[in-house]
Image (cartoon, rainbow, N blue to C red; front, side):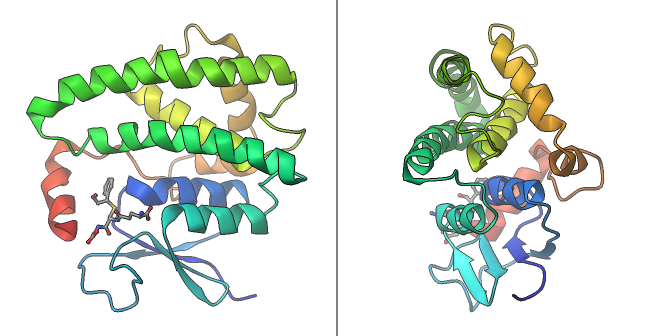
Length: 214
Ligand SMILES: N[C@@H](CCC(=O)N[C@@H](CS[C@H](CC=O)c1ccccc1)C(=O)NCC(=O)O)C(=O)O
């Protein structure tokens, strides 16, 4: 297999962050290529994220995440576990879309969007995963091994806590899940300063990012 995967994106979270999380959880070192103009020749749909991996130039966030999850055994042990993982992850991606886009909204749209995303996190998504953990009774959301569902749930828990630090107040099982998964060595390393993990975008950076894409 070829060397380190090469990540092509702007120097911020956006749609590449779930991919960074998966590669970090798998213990895969990456190299980052800052995408600063749209005139990239090698973008299938003229969009990023694009990841060069195993001789391919993959685009489309879900396709990239599916490949990485399959390659690094983060996708359960059989079809039924994979179906559960897909179901949970698609729900997480819906919440992630709300959390991810918040920082890029114009000021007059932020308040309503914030109220909606916090409501969805506290009353739709987190109650589901609290119930899954309760019913499953294991350390992980699916089966008895780490999967992409656990990795992406930790990612969105931390993003939601950036908006509302006490958002897990009513979810004791999610609180212990967060502590447990954060302690997995590869993830613990990713959570340390100096990793590839990107910070929440600052207000003053938004115009520069939007100019890259529009
Ligand atoms: N289906 C695809 C979609 C990929 C996609 O929308 N890529 C975008 C940059 S990411 C986005 C920029 C603003 O929307 C952003 C940047 C920051 C935060 C959130 C999103 C892009 O390349 N836009 C150029 C163009 O579409 O011409 C996938 O899942 O990968």
